[in-house]
Image (tube, rainbow, N blue to C red; front, side, top):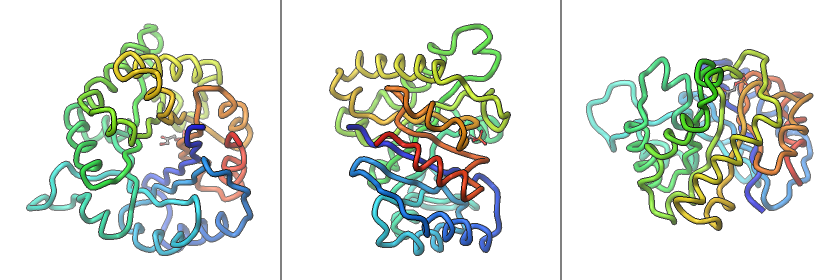
Length: 254
Ligand code: 13P
């Protein structure tokens, strides 16, 4: 079975103390993880070391960065390199979140470079894609999202793309309380798998985890995650509330 992942994206929220308390609360619960289930916390950069210390030795749980730069090192004030992440023991990075694309003008090409450098340092990219409302209303979401994958991921060889996790997040569903229906999530995620299959073959497409993100919460996670092409979720708002995220973890496919 593909990896089933409950990924929290804290975005730019919480103080260090609040974040540590949230991790303590969530990690203090007992989960019966199966071998293919994982939990990821994408925390703000200043908290990476503290968060990493909290999950040390905890099976199935990983800390992710929310971003990294596309250069190894140098005069890039304020940026975070993959080598820095590796030096903290971080194994995952969220790349191409729609907020990064929108507010920081991150292009598909720029993201392709970030994917490359993350993989070079053996860090798993959680690569985000998803369409704005205007594209959904025009009915061209499949082509739009496929292009994001083609321009940022399809230069990879088979072994490399197998290391990527994809998160489909329709922008109109992020932080709006307006979730895509489970049927909408399934439809486009099955399509993305077809696009991957036509480039890399069915065995590769069947191995890549595709998460859904956009107003996932305790009350809808089970229904969304039960879809055959949805392998868990990337969760913003609801990941900031311990009981909500615990329920989302427990909603992963067994
Ligand atoms: P919300 O769960 O708050 O809609 O955010 C989704 C998201 O952007 C996760 O990366």
